[in-house]
Image (tube, one colour):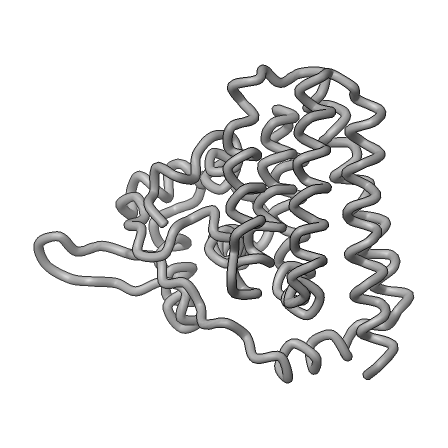
Length: 246
C-alpha cells in the first residue's frame, strides 16, 4: 500500500499533539494504533525526529523513547546512514488461537459496553459527516469500502473495517472523534478477524459501508447515523457470540 493511498483527516489525526499525561505511552499508542489500522502504510518512512516530535507536541527525548518501544513491539524499524530513518513495519497476522485467548479476556458485558461506545462514536460521526462533508471528501471512504469488498485475508479485512470508521470520523471534521476511533480500534480491531473470515459477512459489511456513504452523500444524517450504528452493533453481537463459545 502506497503512502498517497491513505490521506485526509484520518492521517492528520495521527500526527496531532498527544495528551500531556504519560506522553511516551500516548505516542506509542497513537502511532501503534495507526500502524495496526493501516493508517500508516507498511514500509512508510515516518517524519524525521525533530519534525515528528514537533507535530506530536513532545520533546525529541520523549519521541525517541516511544520509537524504542515501537521497535521492541516490531512496529517500527530504524535504518542508519543515507536514506535512513524510522519506517513502519506492519505486524504479522495474529493467529486465531492468540485472538481467541485475547477475546477470552473480555467478558460479554465488557464487549457489549465496548459495542455501545463504538456505536455511539460511529453514529455521531456519520450524522456529522452528513451535515458537514462535501462529496469529494468521501473518496477515502469509498476506496476503503471497495478494498474491503475484495480483501482476501482476515487481517486486511479487519484493518479496512476499522479504517472505514476512522475515516468516517475524519469526514465529520472532528479531530477528537477521529482520535477516539483510532484508540477504540486498538481494543477491537484485531478481534474482528474472528468474524470477518466469513466471506458472506465481509460482503454484508461492505454493503453496509456503502449504504452509510450514500446516506452521508445525500445529507440524510439520521439515516447515516442509524446505519453506522447497526453495522457496529451487528459486529459486536457476532463477537459476543464467538466469546460465548469459548
